[in-house]
Length: 185
Ligand code: TMP
Ligand code: MG
Image (cartoon, rainbow, N blue to C red; front, top):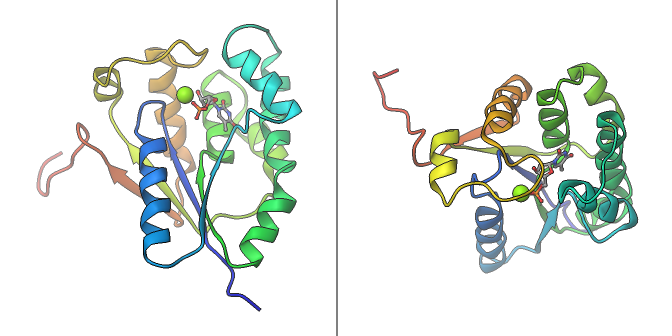
């Protein structure tokens, strides 16, 4: 039987460079002889994904709880296929996961524990790479886009919520603009 692939999750605020880094990581893994694939949540191609896309593009409105559950359903419907890929030896690099779900919805004011519940039972990541970038620096990168959550005030709150979710499986990657130096604060 093939050795199980790794489930590598990449998280961060909007404009933190996740998509580029995910692509780089998949390419690196493939070049070094691993089976690796990129996965992205939300997956906007499915039925739930289309509703999410419409909400994010502000073409439709939904209750905060309802959209939270849709994001979670969008992950649940992918689990069987992802599990099979991992079991057949493919490493998955996942651009956003349940942590984004909790961070964004709790930043909007929903209870953090309530937000965690629908994702309980999803595949557990082997590692979570958190791409950290100050919101000032994120804005300097050409500014946020037009989607619903791409606003400075909300992104500041999202970054704080992400900080509450970090555990032993997280590796925080300091990006340009949030560099830390030994001996400084
Ligand atoms: P994207 O920019 O990576 O396509 O993600 C779309 C937006 O959806 C982004 O602002 C983060 C947000 N989001 C949630 O609110 N909940 C979730 O569960 C996920 C995966 C993303
Ligand atoms: Mg975005």
